[in-house]
Amino acid sequence: MQDFAERLLNWFDLNGRKNLPWQQGVSPYRVWVSEIMLQQTQVTTVIPYYERFMTNFPRIDLLAQANQDEVLHLWTGLGYYARARNLHKTAQQIMTDYNGEMPLTQWELETLPGIGRSTAGAIIAICTGQRATILDGNVKRVLSRVFKIEGWPGQSKTSRELWHKAEQLTPDTRVPEYTQAIMDLGAMVCTRSSPKCQLCPFEGNCRAYKTQTTDQYPGRKPKKEMPVRQIKMLVIESDQGILLEKRPPRGIWGGLWSFPELATEAQVKTYAETLGIRILTSASLPTLRHTFSHYHLDIEPLHLQITNATSLKGQDSNLIWFNKEDPETLGLSGVVTKILESR
Ligand code: SF4
Image (cartoon, rainbow, N blue to C red):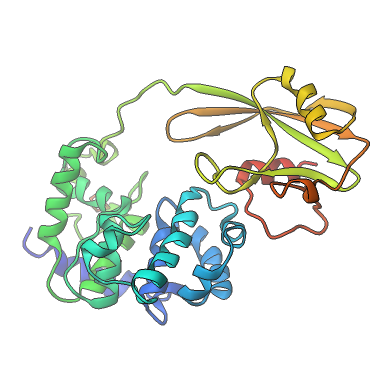
C-alpha cells in the first residue's frame, strides 16, 4: 500500500490523541518514562501513575538519586515491576555515563536496561523527528491484520516480518506524528476484540477485514499447559501492624515488600521461633491465584495473630511492621495490597 502513512496521518490529524501528559513539554526523559509505563499497560491506567511519577521525579537526576522503595512505591499497582527497577538503574547509568543527557542513538539506547528496539525507536522518533521505527503491541496488531501476517509475533520469523513491514512503512517526514498515530490506531480503533473497522482509514485495504478474519490476527501464542506453584504467605499481625519482608532484588516482585513466604505450613513453627514470636491464633484466608507469564501462583495466606511484637525493624532492616493507618513509602505488589485491604 503506497499511501499507508498518508492515510494514517490524515486519520491522526482528525482523531489522534494530542493532549496526553507526555506530549506536553516533550523531552527524552518524559517520553522514555511514558514509553516504559505504556509497555503492557493502557493509556488510561498509565496517566495518573505518570503524573504522580513526574511530580515526584520531574528530572532524571532526581530519579537517579531516589531510593528504590520510593520508585517502587510510585509503581505499586502498575505491575511488571522490573520496569521500575530498570528505569531507576538506567537513570543512574545515564547520570554516570552520559552526564545526565539521554543518548539519542538506537544502539546506545538499546544498551540501557529495559530499553528494547521498539522503545528506543519511539524515543528517537518522538524526540528528534528522525526516521526510527516502533513495533509495540498495538502496531503488531494493526500490521498483522492489514497485511495478514501469519504467526504469533513472539516467534522470530513473524517478528522479523513485522519489523520489516514496520520499517518499510515508516515515512521520512512527520515521524513523531506517525509514531503516535500508529499507536493510537491500534489502541482506539484496531482493538484486540471488536475492532471498529468502519472508522479505520484502512477499511478498504485491510486483508483481515476483507476476509472477516480479524479475530485470527495477530496469531496466538501456542498454548502450553501452565504449571501451578503453591506458596503460603504469612499475614502476621500484632498491635504494631502487619509484618512485611523486603524481597530479594531479583526474581518475582523483586525489591518489593511482601508477606513472609513459606513452602508449607509445617515450616510456620520454625519461622515463628526464628523471629521469637508467640502465635495466639492462626486462620487460613481465601486462596488467591496470580498468573505470571510462565506459571500460575496459588497463594494461601495464613493469618497469625501474635502477642509479643518486638521492634523487628531494629533487628533486621528487611522486616517492618506495616501500619495501614500510617503507611510507609514502600513498593507493594498487587497481591499484597489486596490482602492488606481485606484486613
Ligand atoms: S480495518 Fe479493522 S482490522 Fe483492519 S486495521 Fe482497520 S480496524 Fe484493524
